[in-house]
Image (tube, rainbow, N blue to C red; front, side, top):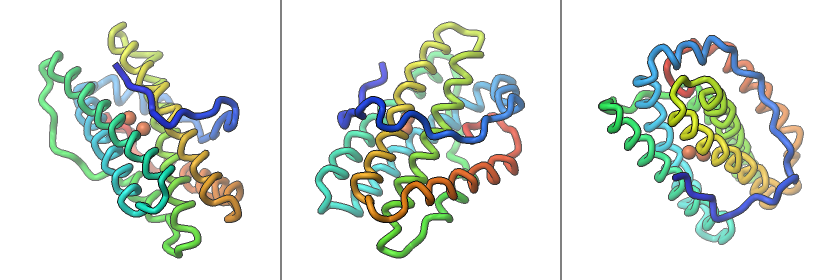
Length: 204
Ligand SMILES: [Fe+2]
Ligand SMILES: [Fe+2]
C-alpha cells in the first residue's frame, strides 16, 4: 500500500528526534470525529507532496536533494490517494483544505538568509514529519478498527523514514551551519507551539 521512499535512509544514523509527547486529549478529539480527521489527513498528505516539490524547485542544481524530493513528492501523493480511497470506502466526502497554524508558525521560524535557509527548511520538515509519525502511530495503536490500524501502521513507518531523510539531507547539505544547536532551538519552539494548540480532529 505505502511505497518506500527511493532515497533509503541508512539505519541507525539518527536514532530519534525527540519531541514533546502529544497529550492524550488530542487522540480523544481525533477518535471522536475520525471522518473530520481523515479529511484533514488527506489535505496534509497533499500539502506534504507540494512542499517536497517546492524544495525541489528551489534547488535544481542539487541532484541528490532534487531526486529525494521527487521521490518524496510521489510517495506523499500516494498517501493522499490512499487516504482518499479509505474515505471513499467509508462514504466520507473530503472537505476543503484548512489553514494549518502549526505548520505556518514553524515555517515562520525559517531564517531567510541564504546560508541558513536550506538548513532551517530541512529541519522544520524533519520536525513536521516526526510529529506526523508520532501521531499516526497513536492512531495505529488506538483505533478500534483493525484495517484502519493496519493502514496507520504503514503510514507511520513511512513517515518515520521521512524525518530521518530530512535530517540526513540537512547533515549532507549543511554540515557547517550548526545543525545540532539549531535543531535544539526548533524542537523547543515546536514544544511551545504544541502547548498552545487546541485539540481538534486534525493532524495538528
Ligand atoms: Fe505522508
Ligand atoms: Fe511524510
